[in-house]
Length: 468
Image 1 (cartoon, helix red, strand yellow):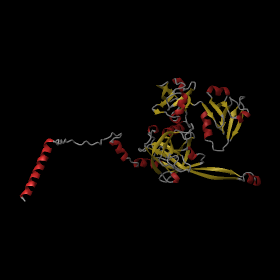
Image 2 (cartoon, helix red, strand yellow):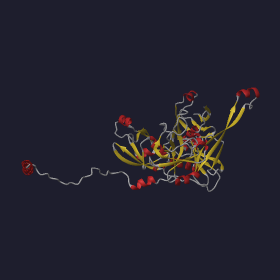
Image 3 (tube, rainbow, N blue to C red):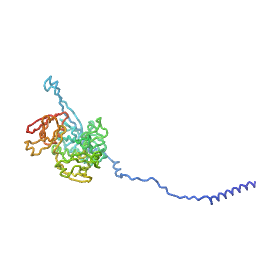
Image 4 (spheres, rainbow, N blue to C red):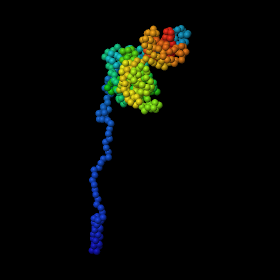
């Protein structure tokens, strides 16, 4: 027993001596370094401020809606159509086959003064024999047509009333893409309806046609009956007149278009003061730039209006603008497309002075241009180019009004002997004073209606021609 214990004791003592020797002479000491952990996540810079977030969260449409809903009216136009049955007249005598029927159209309008001036679309009241306006409180008024502008699709009405609620004009040039807007109108013959959206684009040319306005595009829902209604900002200011939708079904599909308020305001002011729309001419011709045009012209600029020619004695010519100049700004309005240029000029009148910023051989320059009256017009519908006549020419021809034919491409008129130098004096028994009168009369012509054009030939004799 003692022998066994001795063996165990010596074994334990040997193991302890071995382990101690390893620890002292062989194993390297461990070093522990304490280090504070660094968080790899960091804050990234942002491009907004707390005030902007707050404004988005607190956007309130109720103020704008309250300001505008009672200033938008329902417009009903009634036109009387005449139908003739030639067979009934043949068997029963002249007049027996004539029948009249009424056609009713509806839309919206915007009250712009407390004494009853109302703006709407020209197409809402076109050919109307009677116009009726209904306020949001269901009160009805007979409306008088003050004037129209088919080019900009604007019409001005007047009702005999006082202390009406009205909308004030805002600056359509100042609106920004992405800005909140409200569309107020009478879709589907409902009473005033408000929809909200944003400005989707500016300066839209719907068909690539220079006669189409520089529209504001929005995604606020607009449907049949909204035409002539108000497009307003969140302050309740009028920034556009809702005019059109782009749709195969006739119903809203995501975007609509409005005439900018700056154009509408200028049109109605002209109608009230002059009885017609005053059109200003810059005195240049050319086209808008894009990548392909820039490559063809061997220039780097892909935005702006490229001048390919300057009209002699025009405001542009007198200010020193030249061929190959590129217009990039009018006053403080950026010009990227022809629609931008056209839309800006439609807010101006002859004799207005504007600042033009343009590029010439890569250098930026500024010139002040006095806009002039439109003295020439190309009327494609009847194949004529026309010039205004000054007082001396009118006196020489012994006439009081008329416009002269400067070019003719209408082969039918050429066949009947119409030549350069003929003078158009009247259309449908209405006097023609300027080339703009001819443009307006043709643009306002109902589809299928007859145009009776009265002319003086080179001998001073009257001739009449009928166009359909």
